[in-house]
Length: 375
Ligand code: FES
Ligand SMILES: [Fe+2]
Image (cartoon, rainbow, N blue to C red):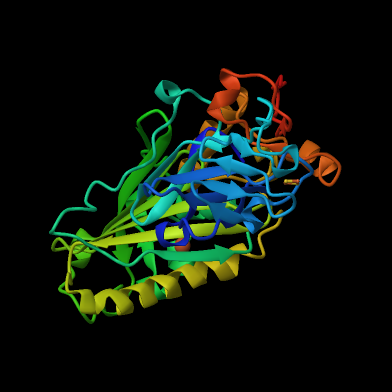
């Protein structure tokens, strides 16, 4: 798991100024709430007084109030009220929690979980056709799965599994010409990579949406890409302009569980009356993957590729792992072993951008591989 990327925190409608929304991402807890101007805020959930869970508290004006002794924290993470000090006394400067930059898109509140200054941050992967009238976005689907998010992303980057795992897609197989050849993987900006290739349909009449649209099997193409560690995009071109684009924004909940925010774009059957059947078929296909991924061994991606036997069709996965290594070298990788060791004894937080400017933080930063974080 890596800091310094955009993570989906909650659906926009779950983030209100009536009650805080508490959620777990990368094994740490966060609280999201909205101020009276409608702006969404995401803070570290742990109260720096004596460890209360802010997300179980209340919203008071534009602050979240800890349920334990009523300390209030504003959207910047500053404590503005300490009731036991009385009205005259200002909270000390150290009374602050980490506050993360947010943006809202596609019905999702995203937070930048990391400390990079704005000009150095990897961007959020955007959906270029989202507002395009020639496309229809399905209602956002949020679902949780019992496997590690990197396993999910790697599965999405794998062209060789479809013919074995996806009868609901009509078992699209790699063309003979593409077998045993390195896949042409192209970078997406500085933080992602993708591939596209033609696919062969074993039984055209069983293909995805075969009963509803005029497909052209000779034009069938598919591909996928990742951006950052946790955004996965799948492009399915069924022929005759019948295109599907699928976006998975993934939030690792912890080392074993993942929450996926799924936006499906389609370039055909634009009438909203088709939304449900398309969501249903998408989730049936997702279930084919889920059944397989919940039993992968080991649970998390191996640290070294010597404990797997990789073949040319795994090239997109290898490119993804090269990126992960690069981000590890930059000091962005959470040290899960250390985090496991200290859990229960020490509360930590993902460092927010303000830690670059201010000192005096109560909580330690989450342990990072190869990086000592001074507080
Ligand atoms: S623990 Fe939050 S106010 Fe005391
Ligand atoms: Fe799949």
